[in-house]
Image (tube, rainbow, N blue to C red):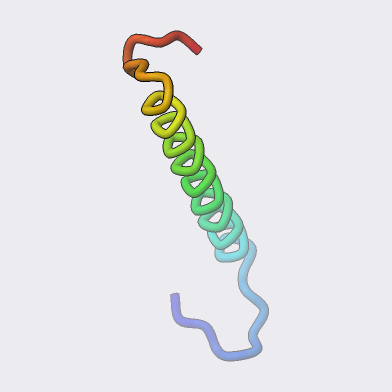
Length: 53
């Protein structure tokens, strides 16, 4: 839906924007965790698929 500049976003658009931002932050956090795990397993030589959390 097209909005006019300065117009207040509707409730559903506001919700979608919040969800989009939360999803983006969550994805970034998960990627950082995966990178840290990969780096840690590379240092220890452990296979990440066979180690338990």
